[in-house]
Image 1: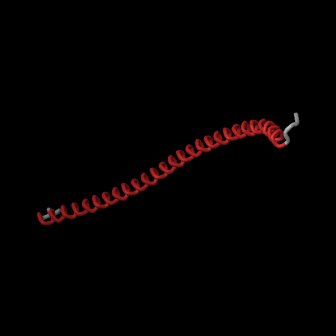
Image 2: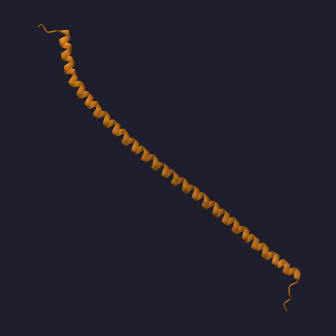
Image 3: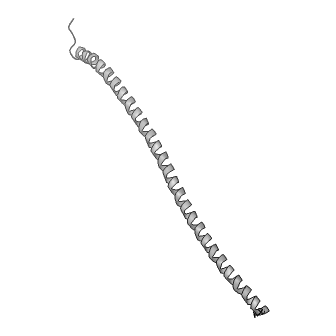
Amino acid sequence: MLEEKTLLEQVRGKEVELAAAYARACADADAMKETGAREAREEIERAGREGRQAAEALFEGAMDALEREIELVRRDARVQEAALRSAGETHVSEVAADLVRFVAPTSE
């Protein structure tokens, strides 16, 4: 014959079941907490990588633009230098002739 459990035994059985359920819930909560923390770290690392990549892209773009601007300035300077050199060479012969006339006046 099966004996029915006493009320105290039934309460004790429920306590054991609830304790096991509580332990499982705590373990599940700890696992979810760990998963959340890991996912948060991964997200932060990913955002950091993306941020560095974006900053590097902006920096490289700015450096490229600066290099282009420097090259334009250099090209303009070379053009101006050539123009000044040409103008100077044209005036050298005139100045030399003026100096010769000043130093050695022609007798008229």
